Amino acid sequence: MAAGTTVKIFVGNLSVDTSQEELAAIFEPYGTVVSCSVLRQFAFVHLAGLEGAKRAIQQLNGCEFKGRNLVVEESRGRPVNSTKVFVGNLTALCTAQDLKELFQTFGKVLECDKVKGYAFVHMEKKEDALQAIETLHGTTFKGRPLSVELSKVQPSKRAPTGKIPCVNCGKHGHYAV
Image (cartoon, rainbow, N blue to C red; front, top):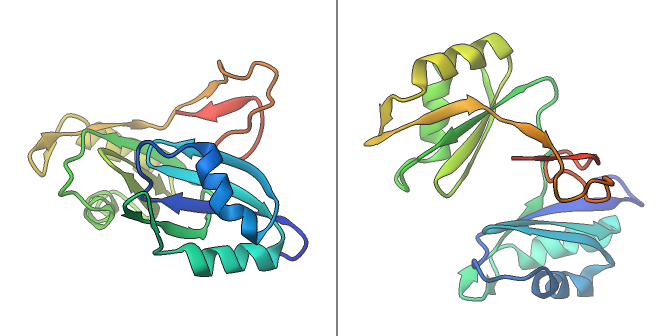
């Protein structure tokens, strides 16, 4: 975390009815909430100031909020020069580690993020990702047929002026699907 900057914080394990206002309110004691984006059961909070962000992460991680224990950590950006693969139709029994092991048979996996019934796998080489997609799409894994494809980035339909940044990279003019 660099000093004097806005820190992007990942907040996971949210209740489905959590609003942006409610989440921003629990971060306000730690500094100025620059933005707060709630997406399904996770969110990203941009908090001004390094020290406040560190305190928020330390004090809020594991705290109970709306009946759930929050996961609060500094957001990790997408690995540079990687290919992002969407994996859908996952069973609750499937873990990120299971997926990492499955995809490593095709090449180096840089990161794997599982969210409910889907995940994103970041592979080092595009050709390895394409081979994994071709081989795994439609195959049964842990009792369910997998939907495996390149992750899509589409022009924003919600913000034609580009005022809402992408939830993955923070840039304007598009959003990740």
